Image 1: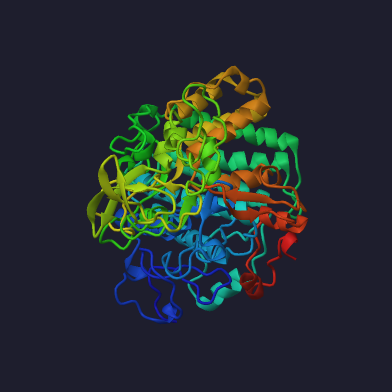
Image 2 (image 1 turned 90 degrees about the vertical axis):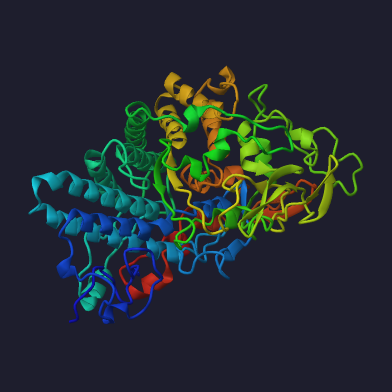
Length: 625
C-alpha cells in the first residue's frame, strides 16, 4: 500500500469524504492512488501544537461550505424567495461542489434534493474525527505546557462535529454515526463505512451533547481568534440542541420511525436549554452589537445613515461579541470569499444576481415605532394603471407607507425609491434608487439624474439591503464577512421560548425580547403580548421572523413547531396560498391541493438513494418509501 498523505480520504464511499489539502478543495476521484507532492506525510506530522492547529483550521474550512449559505434555506419559508427554485445552484451560481448544490429551496417539495449536503456533512465529521484522534494521541506524550491548548483544539473539533451531526438529525432524523476516523486502507474503509446502519436519533443527540459539554469545559471564555469559538458558543449550541429536542418531544415527529412524543422529556429539555442560554446571556459580559442601540436612521429614500442592525451584517461586526459562532471568509484574492453580494444584490452592484430576495409579505411584519404593533396591511397597486398608487394610504408603492417602522426594516429591505451604493469594477457609481420593474433605467428624483437599481431577479417589489455592502472595493464573491451560525440575539429569543414553554412569560425573558426589539427602536412589548404562553410565543415568533430573516432559521422553526400547515394551508386545500408583489399581482402559488404525503415529506428529508444503493443497511424515512 502506498504511503497516505495527511488526510483520511475514502475512495467511492457510501458517505463521500472531502479530499485535498487542509483548505477547501473540490473532490477528485483517484486521489488516494497518488503520492502526495505538496503535502506533509503523516509520519512527519502531528508533532507540534502548530500541526494540530493547522489540522483544526482544515476542519473548519471543510465544514464551512455546509453552513455559510443557510439563507437559501429561508426560501423554504414564507418571507424569502430563492428565484431559481428547484435548481438554485447550477450554472455556476454556487461554487462547484458546494454542499448546497442542487437543493430545492421552494416552500414545498424540497425534501428529496439534499444528497450533497448529506455527504458534505459526513466529510466534515470525518475531518473532525481525524483531528480528535490524532490530537488525543499527542496528548499522551505532550509537555504539560501544551496540554491546555491541545485540549482546546479537541474541544473545537468536537464542537464542529456536534454542529454537523445536529444539522444531520434536524434534516434526516436517525443517521449513521461515525465515532472515529475510518481506516487508512481504502478497502477496509469502504467495508466499515459501507455497512453502517442508522443510529436512533436519541443516541446521536446524546453524543452531540457529550461533544458540546467537553467543548464547553475545555474552550476559553473568549475565542483566541476570529472564526474560533469559546465557551459561550459551545453553550449556545448545546442549548439549541436541547431546544430542538424539546420541540420534537413536545410536538412530535410522526414521519420519523420509532420517535415518540413525551411531555416529561420535553419539559426537561426545555429546562436544560434555558439553563444554557441563561449562562450565555448572563455569565460572560456579552452584549448585542453596539450595546443593542438602534443607531441612526436616514429619512425615507436616503441611505447615508443606516441603523446599527444593518452594520451587524457587514465586516464591521467581525469579531463582535454578539457573534457567538461564525465561519470566516478570506476576502479578496483568497478564493475563499463569501458570496453575499452575488446572492443578495442586483446587477448594479458588481454584476450580482439577486438569487434571493424578500417576499412581499415580509414588509407587513415590521411594526410601528409609535404603537409597537402591526400597521394596516400594505395594498399592492400598479402605478402604471392606478393614478394615485404612489400617494394612496397604505399603498405598497407609496414610500410614505414605510415611515416610522422598526429600524430593522430599512436595514433589511429596499422598497421603491430607497437608495443603495452602486458598484462596477470595484468602484462606486454613486447612489442608485430601487424602483420595481425599472431595471437600470434613467430616472430623475428631486432634480437629480440616476440610473435605477437593476434587480431583474426580483418579483416581489422589494430587494434586500441586509448583507449587501455599502462600499466599493470588493467583487461580488470576494467578501470577508464572518457568517453567523449563532448570534446572541438568537440566544435571547431561544431562552424566551424555552422558559415560556416551561413556566409561561417570565420577567427576564420578556426583558431579553425587549432588548432585541430595542435595536429596531421599538417600544417594549405591551402587556397584551405577555398575558400567557400563547401570546408571548406569538411575540417571540414575530421577533424571530424579523430579526433572523435571511439567516436560515425560519424553515427549521416551522418544522420543529409543526407549523407548516398553520402558516400555509392544510392538506388538500384547493386555493393554496398566493405570494404577491407590490403591484398587486399574483406571482407564485404554493400548497395548492397538496397531498398529506407531501406535507410529510416536507417535515423530513429523504436519505439519498445513492447512499442506500451503496449501503444495504441504510433504511429510508417513511414518507419516502
